[in-house]
Length: 257
Image (tube, rainbow, N blue to C red; front, side, top):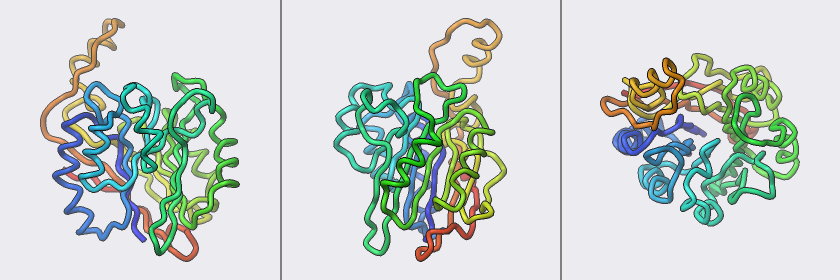
């Protein structure tokens, strides 16, 4: 079974590029299931029902989120109602709408998707993601399990990969918008990449106009983010999963331009 995981989609320009390129890539690579991080899919960041629906109608099967999950209030009820969109499971249980994991019945197999967020350098009060992962794995019933670990720090992501090695099918990192060159199968059969990158404008800083970010760094003053425009890329990783064992047999990253 081939599972494709797409890096953070940035704004309407990223959504449009994904729609243009995803259907052909799915056919070419014989992809069975597509997971996409959509937490920046709305212009101005966050996700809205409109941007989520755009991703689904473009060929995405499942959406994961991150630290911008609740940026837009209009998505709150959508998170409660749509079983194919999840937010990080280690938000305090009393606060947010939505859920942190789900199981998809494909008929021939079941796929569990878990969304977790790192604690290091993230502006949120979060439960320990390692402990939450243990708790979820005791509850979830699926042959194949994929984890989106939305985290700033590479060491924390790497640690999560090894912590879950042999217990889940794959772990892919999101949040930094920069693809790492370490797609691999870990020793006990878990596919892994530290960060899958982004889907958005190439000539930008994480999808935002360069001059805005440069002024922010050089002046220390706040700036309103504006999305860049121009040629785009789509970053993703494809995991080959054995349906019988749930183990990953290959991991390959791609950049579509």
